[in-house]
Image 1 (cartoon, rainbow, N blue to C red):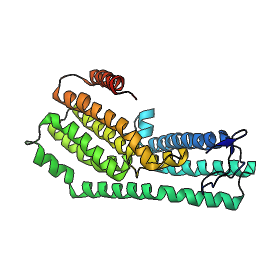
Image 2 (cartoon, one colour):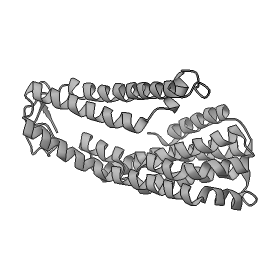
Image 3 (tube, rainbow, N blue to C red):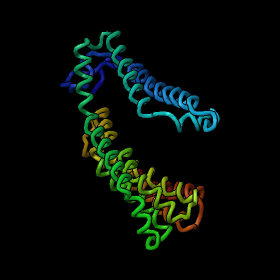
Image 4 (cartoon, rainbow, N blue to C red):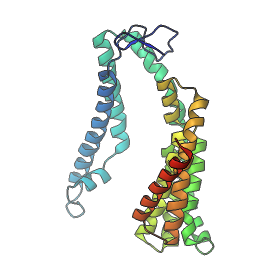
Length: 287
């Protein structure tokens, strides 16, 4: 796409979510809705969490702190209201500027909704699977079965590899966390003997591995939105981003999860070694 004049969209077959030819491209039309979503999300979580903390009985009420507020907040509700606020702000902007008529704006909203339905379904099914795993006691069963047969050091890299595979197959980092985290907690508690550091290591392996597929999976919402925003071919984007994702994943696994699990060095040293390894790889192979 080639811009004409001061950020106007060129002629040439725009798609259903593209601006009409000649529409000025203003940064505020993106910054204000996204800023509204961020502020409304955190504001809603803080307000909801504070109200719930104050409603607790005096005997069990924790001090009103950021940790207690966020731990008692309903982030899902806050995200829903924040998304609605962001959509309304975007609608108000395009209508006030005359960029779209109301029927055109609603048609664009419907087209955008189609793009997020698939990731929403993946996430919903992942949450459902996580709930089933919790209800049938899969985590407890695995913890009892593997307590004697699984080496303590091997759980973090196994969790990372499992998260890599699930996130790439599902395209959802949150969905991967919803599936893996209910299994990781009891296993880490059993194998680590209640060690807080070991539990954090295993959870970190899950969180890090879950972002892998979110970056390079061809069905990830992040990948799809990147392709739509940049007009890059989907296969080309996946082919060019995957080597970087694999480099980061392999570095985290080989210089982080495995040696830290073996007790060769700690997390801070792992970060330093990982950064050095990635720098060396880029120096040798280039970008």
